[in-house]
Amino acid sequence: MPLAPPPVLPADLATALRGRLSPGARLAGGVVSAAAPGDVVAALRLAGRHGVPVGGAAGRGLVVDVDALDEVTVSQAGWARVGGGVRWRRLAEAAARCGVAPVTGPTPAERVADAVTGGGVGPLARTYGPVPDRVRAVELVTGDGVLRRVTAEDAPELFWGVRGGGPGLGVVTAVELDLLAAPTVHAGWLHWAGADAAAVLARWRTWSAALPPQAGTTLLLVRPPSGRDTVAVRFAWTGDPADGAAVLDGLRGAVPPRRDDVVVRRPGDLGTAPVPADGVESSLLLDRLPVAGADALLAAARRCAPRAVELRLLGGAVGWVPERGSALCHREARLAVRVVGGAGAEQRAATWACVEELADVLGPDTGGREAAHGVGPSPDVLARTPTPAVRERLAALAAATDPHRVLEGASRRGPADRSGGPGVRGTG
Image (cartoon, rainbow, N blue to C red; front, side, top):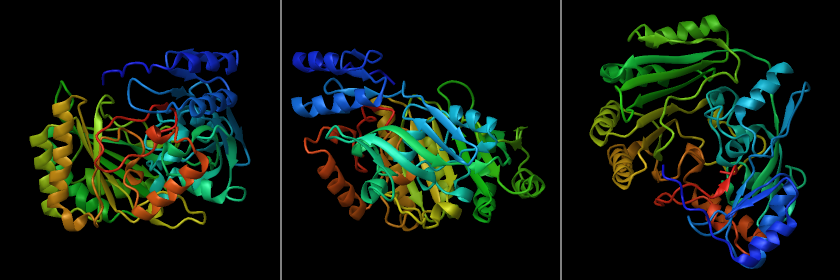
């Protein structure tokens, strides 16, 4: 995807920022690379004072980069604290040395903070729930430039909203979350040639519908810009490996894969989906996938030629009501369809059309949920189209903590927004 032009800041704001940032922080164009939470505080306070948005449209506003906030602390008591720039892979490696493991988001390359605000539904979510359910505390700088430590006891409403509510409530500087006692999982990927797509999808549809909460699975139809089409299925089993192998035989026995790397692994070693990373996404949530819907999905994938089409099984612990609720919506959905297309205008339009076509065909099976377009890789599938009640509640929180509306450009977009991702790096 082409890089957006660097933001242009008013000269007086740039001068004021340089005078407020810590020695390790940098200001390049309109991008603040924070070295400490205080740099984020300074950036948001000055942005509000000068009327400059954070995470606004390309070419204007201020971008806050928190990648350097890379603290990782793991306790053998079963919890971790990580900075806003830390990714799941690094946390998983640190946790493994202490005999514990995180419940990761969809990919180990994602930031932990992004999965918290974006509602990360990872490969173990059907057993242990989405990432927001594991959070103990979030530290973030809200739009008024205040660094807040948010917990269920001290700030219950903001704690509700920042978990799954998108990046519009603040720039996350640290997260504390519960870990698992070091389990292993029977997990990995199965691969087929593109010519097997119809047979694999037909079997996966019926096989996945009967899986217990110990199993998580995703099916991918991959169409790279160059090379041959492929089909891949991720499988993760949190119970006894022998039982998991028997369950998986219900799929691979029916359509033998060309490659199979499902073995016993640590939860942080589940690999990344083979999806091109330079495109844009549209998605749709379903209550079920009927035979006609599977046929329509395959036909649309062939006709619209997206980079990838993903079917992710939800249900299990994803649909359970947690003790401490969050802004994460649509937990009752059973399946997520995610279409990844190229970044060009025609390719974006084709991705949009593909999902809208599927929404028309699968209308009764969408449960009235709208398709979501152009939101990029985060927030995750459940957090892209909040219900009206959740949207109003999040708006009230934003109004209370962001009087100058400096974070409006980073807030979650509606289902018909074709804009790119937010300009707050490391928050969504």
